[in-house]
Length: 366
Ligand SMILES: NC(=O)c1ccc[n+]([C@@H]2O[C@H](COP(=O)([O-])OP(=O)(O)OC[C@H]3O[C@@H](n4cnc5c(N)ncnc54)[C@H](O)[C@@H]3O)[C@@H](O)[C@H]2O)c1
Image (cartoon, rainbow, N blue to C red; front, side, top):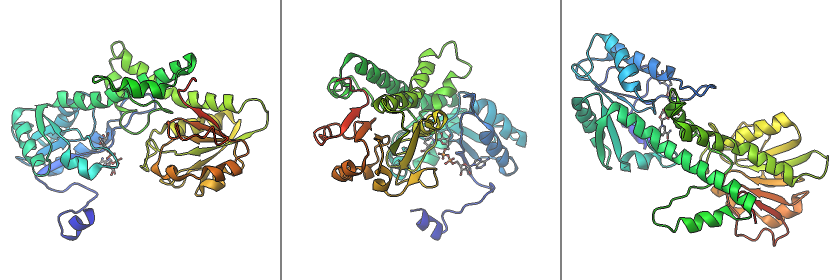
């Protein structure tokens, strides 16, 4: 689709803004090491529009942003142009909610929230999105739109933390968390999320911090859930150590998947990177990584079976579809010790224990 748009002249790319009717700002909004938002990309992108902005233009901030960014940062920068927001040009926040992997589809089909700095802005921006959005469009103010986007991802972070905590509880009391989740979710008003080795990506692991910032006294659940999810790589590392305890030899583990979620090539904020950091710091294990979606990572093996050869533990870290066709007979022959730790319930019911593996499942205390 991009190629076609470029070939027929409908899409051109430039490294600097040019005159336009509508400017959409969709630059990164990461957190810094201190978990405070980094807004310099939004500031410089907004700044770069100033020489080109003219009467009746529309500026849309799509970047996920802390409450007040549109009103208190974007608007004052744009008004350095001597034009007045609301009177001379229109501004709104319309958060992007596409799911990586389904972006082209969701850009069109998802519903959209438009938070204008005033009603005129909301109505004008609505017309822009109406040209391609088939989902419903909801109008509100800029700050409400900013909080909606942040809360959507925070909701998911909190629910994943709930399930990660439940997984730990189930291990302690001898229950399988995956059975609990499956059965509890039969309740019409319950939707437990999936536990795992942590939460990554540039959205769910980041956005709660925008609500926590300057609200530390109040945003206690949010902060605790961030901490619970961030604790999972260490929790997985401890499990690996326990499984491999009993000998002083340096053991080798083979890690399947390093991205922040299945079937994408994005490693931003991936909890598996954190796990690798812990392994490197502790220096008690050797590791090899297999990830068909990723290139240029230390210890990355292209061939799955070469990576497994001589290893003491196979870690299912990211449930990429490509790992569905693993030949366990071959794996059994190659592994030094046939230990498997599955953090995703990827192989839960496939009888690996019966095949001779020591199969450990995160959250299974049975
Ligand atoms: N990718 C998604 O699926 C997704 C989904 C929802 C929300 N978001 C939000 O959208 C925003 C962008 O995310 P992304 O994944 O597209 O980021 P990205 O890093 O993939 O792309 C951002 C682009 O911005 C450009 N850029 C950086 N500074 C600039 C500047 N000063 N002027 C002009 N361009 C500049 C970069 O070169 C890059 O091409 C973030 O706030 C993110 O949270 C993204």
